[in-house]
Image 1 (cartoon, rainbow, N blue to C red):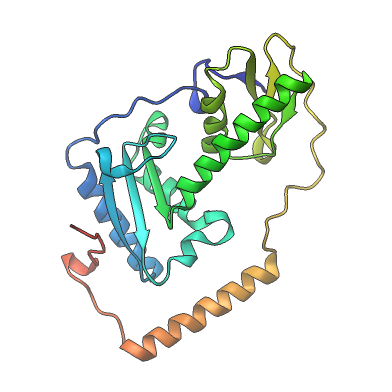
Image 2: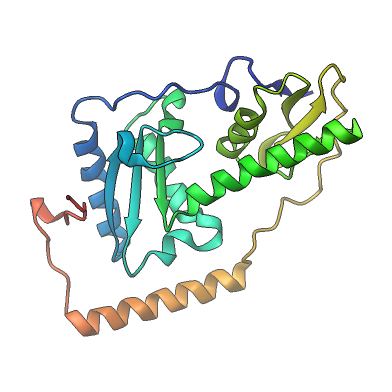
Length: 238
């Protein structure tokens, strides 16, 4: 069984202690984001917040990158899929250790802030349900970052325990009364979970994005280099 109990060892189950970013980290962060956003041709800006300015996130990240601008919807569509991918790409390119990933949070329109609060409240609701019914509860599949939030929300509840179970895109959290043995894993579906938008939706978005890009080019002319050797400095500095 691919199950792991909250509070033991690795990844989403272990609380991460907030730390200050290494010297020069924010500058390297900004250089990389400027280059990527220029390549994506998105009209967005961002600000990097740390310490008390980072906001009241349940995950308590040390550094929050908050995006804004007319093209923000391209980052937040489809459950913020592009925003999450950009966060992961940045972590990989900057060679952050896996234990450091939870210290960084990309957000736009408070999408991540609200999602973290939604998961926290869901965990508390499920905890009450499991206590009352004495029956395990399976959450829907979610990524490791969100599974970790469920575990963190339940970690101080001594009458309950939580496990991550399943593999790949079907990995999920199961909440049990304390002392109850783990359930067998459910049969894996024959097809992977469907995304909210199918191929037709993707084609429509591509066409709309290409049209938007042409409209922007007609309105402002060709884009030339923007400082720092062709990179645009999109960082919002207060």
